[in-house]
Image (cartoon, rainbow, N blue to C red; front, side):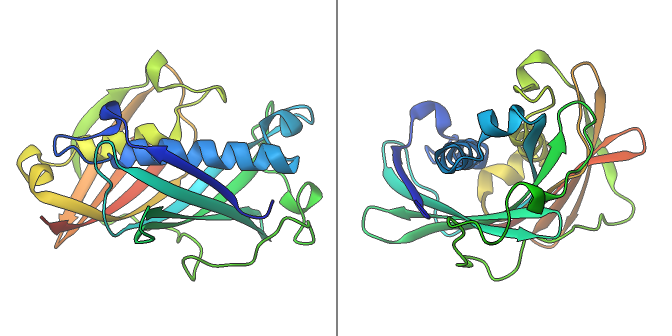
Length: 243
């Protein structure tokens, strides 16, 4: 199937203090839908791991229009758009049961070797002529490459723990968004709606490593970078509106 659809009801443990779906919980659904759809098309985790390769999320751009509330049912759809250079492109949308748009997402994925961790040429495994390719852009441009602002402030230090890890033996991508949101001033985070998220995943981090969290606030935008020493591990831009 070119478009994979799934509905889910927002669980209590997925919500924030306002009883709304947390962005980090939302990211879990994105990740799992990509896994399920790719598996149904023959290029999922099990298919790739047999070849000594795996998918990793490299960039994502999310636009939120409204966050669903606890117990609310939503419908999500995803499709893959083929490849561009080294990236496999996948888009999503999330609607409520009345057809109102809640979120639009575009994401860029890479294939790496399980042992070498080196990038693989995606067209060797998934070309643009694959019958499941659906050339529909929910966001017109792919998720962009981020440039960190100067003079960022060290706001937190994290040690990668067991609960941060996933089956790919690195910190799960959702953790970086959690760390970014947790670094925001507590009084500010209570008052805002995060309307847009852009993330670049630049390097893997592993259990036991120390990650420094730097941040910068400009207008209604918060920029966060996770670094291991001088190496950028992830960059996160959060755009927000006052509630």
